[in-house]
Image 1 (cartoon, one colour):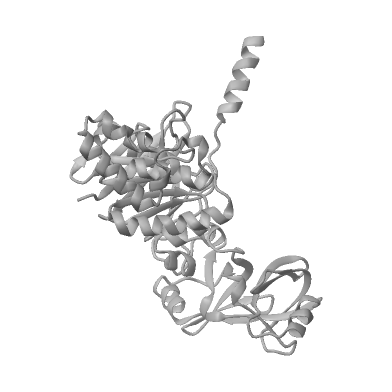
Image 2 (image 1 turned 45 degrees about the vertical axis):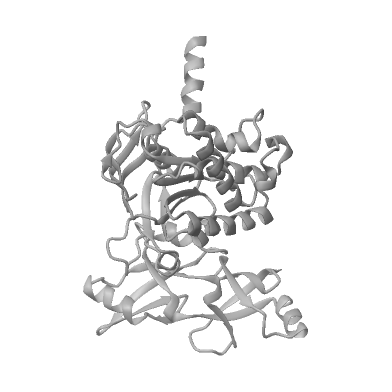
Length: 402
């Protein structure tokens, strides 16, 4: 069994900077978990703590039935694929894949069998005699993955393995990783800053910001019911539109008002607000670009906007507009049912009116960013006030000059 459990895990450096705060997560056997977030959010640090490459400051990490806090990386039965491939340039592909097995004094016959099996899975059998410099980026990444596969680890750790590849190759390798996961049936923990990778690969996704876990959930949960404003803005391309709104209550029903237009609150949100006895207040209303609907100017509860930029994206048009004295929005319009002239007319528009698809809205607390309908939602953290490493070095140099 290869469950991974992190309980109250914390990473704090000597300068006082906390890279990871109170991280709690249970990863099931054979589950594919993706850690995602912007640079510096703590996702790679968390992965390295699981691997044993970073000491933890507090908490507990277990793999299977073993607490691994003080266990050496080589004893944790994990395999890790790094961003920069980390191949030995003087060794052939075959020897790079076999290297870890030879260190463990695995018999030659078994080494050969495992290397050939991994190469077959990854489609690199014909490359076994080449050196890394003779390979493309995608081929090198396959070799790095092959070196990990032959270990047959309990847990497979991958730290931004596709970030050095071009867009086309990244798409191909994402598909390869999905197929690989089906073939080797082990637990994956995958780190990326790319939300597309996270949404397409993960059974569940952990979104992090400034060392805090913002939300853990399936891709569908994160997209449809983001726990706070950060998650809502991070997941989705283009990102969710946010409106200043006022929440009002008439009897048992809540409504939101955006620029004077009434937006009926969906039943499940109404129930959540009533259960928590949320009082009418100023809030932030979120709705994704595809759920802003262009309508006639005389449509009830419509909002007028001035078009600033239109982008033809092939199967859809992105319209950048402003309403209510400069507040920005983006509309995403599918054009599959439009003829050429209708598309041209849409691209030339200078003004439009729109309504909100009410069943798709989310309501957020304007102060702390929490989704008012998501139970136990985490507030958006305030940035840590800490001296950066670069500033510390600069200060030390100034001190020496004095």
